[in-house]
Image 1: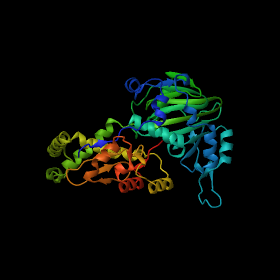
Image 2: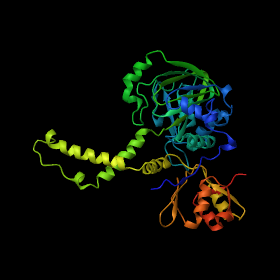
Image 3: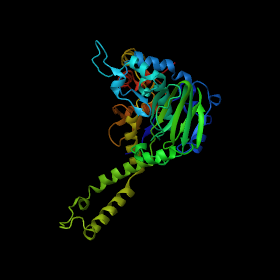
Image 4: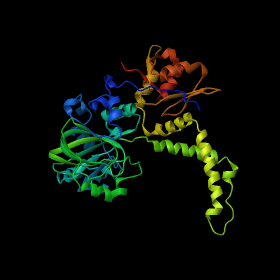
Length: 415
């Protein structure tokens, strides 16, 4: 399959880079000197200073008291353990027949008793973080999630551990004392949780930390996956947001290569053949020729795989890991109905659109939404849209423009 044309990164809101709001140097320097291996502590004085607009203590109160949150969007931790859902939830009352809505009253009691509140999935539930995480994910090329940790004074929410994803820690309010130590498992994969190496982590935690520092409001910590860490709130309530970057790794490339090679060798009837009858089971001398035959077939298959096909497979895997920018169904329907020839339209942000050409028949617009067939005479229009163009509705064609808007692919360009 041909690689086709892929949409470019959208312009950040207000022309601001999400990453540049988190680190005190440019993207190239961060990527070269720190990404995936070196922790960074960025002080508020060296950053743009606009992080408080993303989240704060008032945001916490609104989410837990007025939004009807349910598990798993919230969890509670105390003394190094995660509490059971029933300890902080209750029924929704009349007209809300659910049993696990967050109870603000129970949270008040637990929090005043020293428990920490963890708000999960804020990249789906809190508007400013929805927009920010989508922009950061596009700049990094890796999916991003957001959680908030609200910790009472002198409390440690979680004991020493490591994460299997990189994190940016944004201190939003209060102060927190951090202790970090080098990895006991370098670059752990997503299925290699710290509990698999609990003994090594506990031993490392018994030694003096390599770095110990306090984060104050507006400070940011970047921590690559695998680094062991714990934190304690100081002198009052501490609130920080953790942006988890679920990195794509070379192991993902290996997974796709192996899957493709297996598909190819499975077409070979010699590989599909039954092993010989053997009363001694998998006898070394008997099975050795079979191992060599299959090994050679796999090596040939791996060598024949086109890089473009691997890219296609990785993109297909990556698309559902993030979602397009939010869209209001009612407003979008009204906008599609009201479109005029001079209405300016753009591709929906973060839809990750890609125009896949075809040797015969229509091309396909592939994205985080359903595939959209593109007629040959419309290919130029779609190339312009995927390339970040702003087009008048009459340039697209009013009927096609409305269909693309109702498919969630086009939106009215911002003023």
